[in-house]
Image 1 (cartoon, rainbow, N blue to C red):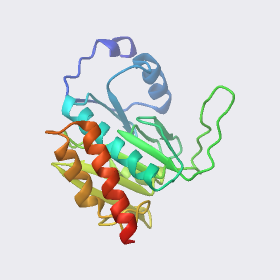
Image 2: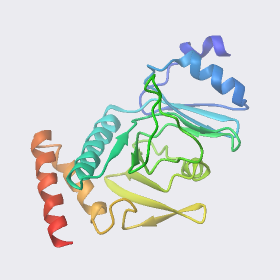
Image 3: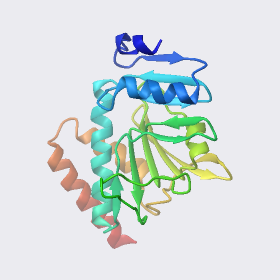
Image 4: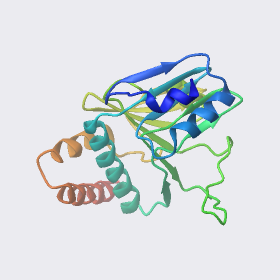
Amino acid sequence: MLLELKRIHVPPGQRVLLRDVTWQELAIILEELGENRTARIAYDKGTLEIMTPLPEHEYDKEIIRDLIKALLEELHIEFVSLGSTFFKNEVMAQAIEPDQCFYIKNDLKFGGDKRLALTVDQPLNLALEVDISSRTHLHIYEALKVPEIWRFYQGQLQINILQDGIYVESQQSLNFPRFPLVEAIPEYLRQSFTADRNKIIKAFRVWVQQQIQQL
C-alpha cells in the first residue's frame, strides 16, 4: 500500500479514506507523501483522511489568516503563526493539520535548528478551519485540547470554545473578547472579492482601532 500512495490522485475538494492505519503506518505514510504535498491529513483512531483543498478554500484561509494577523498586530499581541503544521497525540491516536493555527502570548521555545518544541501540554491558542468541503474534525481538536477553533463555512464564521472537554459555539472569541468578529471577519472577506487585498486589510486595521477606542 505504501508504495502506491504517491499514485493516489485526490481531485481538489475530494478526499480519500484509509482505514485500519496504525500509528506506525501513519508515520511512514507521512514520510512517503513528503512535506511539500498539497493534501491535508487528519487521523482519527485508525482512520486516515487525505483531502486536497479547492482553490477558493486556499483563498479564504489566506485572507482570514491575514485578518487575524492584522488584529493581533493592532492589539500589540505577540504571536507565532504556524500555518498547516501537523499536530498529533499518540496516546489519543489522533492527529490533524489545521488550515491555519496560532500560538498567542505563549513562551515558545525554538532550538538551534529553528524547530519549535511542541508538547501535548502546550496546545495551540487558536486554529482555523475553512470548510468548503465540510472537513472539520472538532473531536480531534478536543483530544488535542485546543481552546478555540474558528470554522468558516458557507460564508459564516463559527467560533467554538472548549468547555469541559467539548466545543460550545460562542459569539465571542477567547483571544479577542468584545470584538464582533463573527460579523466582521466574513464581511471583510466578502469585500476582498471585489477590492484590492491591501485596501481591505488597511480598512480592517482602521476598524480594529475604532473598536479599541470604544472598549
